[in-house]
Image 1 (spheres, rainbow, N blue to C red):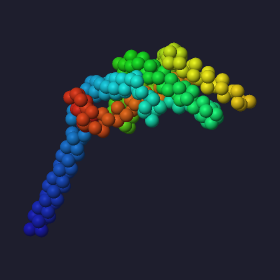
Image 2: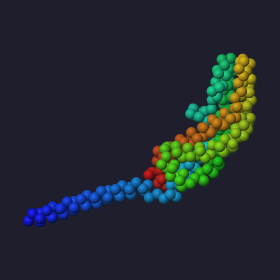
Image 3: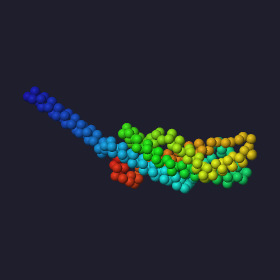
Image 4: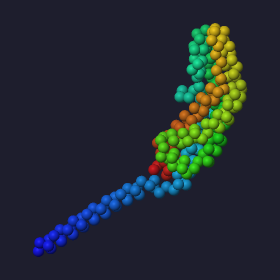
Length: 238
């Protein structure tokens, strides 16, 4: 009788352990299936990210290339470079503030003009995105796609932007105003200042563009309203 009870007790323990293990496996499997991005394919992820980048680039460059795109945006407005701020203060103190304002306005106009040429370079980099790049961007932070573009395009954009900036500075009168500003300043100071205007404006224009694209990317990642296509909704909704 004692042996029979032992056998029944042993069988009960075995059955209970198997049931618990089965439940655990079912739970784990269910979690794995739940976290698989709703069965998104690698092509969908890559295409979704390319679509998001194209959207961000298009909206960002369109905004910045419009009149006042740089000039009236406090976050990216191009001001006097640090080594020229003393110049600005001195000139304003002697009644030449309008010349300084004209120089600042025309620098921003040059950046707005140059922003029009950015889109094709971005589009080319987006087309070259690999599956590995896509996964890295998807799992990255809020501005991972913008960082990808910055890495892939900064050199080419700088090369393309500088002559456009130089031409724009001439067209908008920035060079004339800049030379007037520093010619007047140099009359009052023994220390002559002559920073490279085109390099400075090029650097600031690129920073402004990447800043704006990062904002557009964050919208798509965070705001469902910004996901204007089914593919964007599927990729970023997960």
